[in-house]
Length: 260
Image (cartoon, rainbow, N blue to C red; front, side):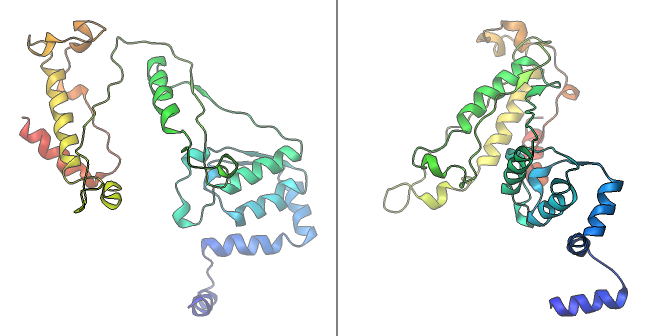
């Protein structure tokens, strides 16, 4: 198949994206090509570097590191999402080490300019617990396992609105059991049937609570911030629902319709 594909591309005089990278790497084996490239380009900036692969690492080594030009990479290992198409998050660590060995330095970007301080505090509280290494994982193997520790964010903006700014709607789901009465590992890895429906019902009910917040029964148990914290006179148009994917949008749409 590969030979037939190459022959067809040759007939049509076309290259695909992989060809562009592979042939560039072959060209960079010639010293005169490297010399011309580094004379023309003195600065290289690569964003989203956590989603690169070994081939792209080799290109940058020849273009920048070996020749001594300026290389600036930006990335976050926690945001690596393209492993399915060949991205290798370890390349980011390897290149970071190589840059430091060549005299470069890391510059962590922990300062958040977008979100208010209570939001950042909530995220730090939550993710400090999510990004814990499992106790059964050997400490010496954490790097090979792809473990990334929590790096707390720092807020540039203060608190600009009254609380609550973050709420967690939590569902307590029944423990799944196998026919033997023991927990079923296979089923526990998946969302139990109806989990999305419960989430959607909770969100719809919370929206109704926010919009109808001035009624006495809703305000009977106000939060620590006082009654006004739950009664900012929300309208439906003030509220947006963000979903991980559109695959579940119909479930939420149905729940909202049932809630009126």
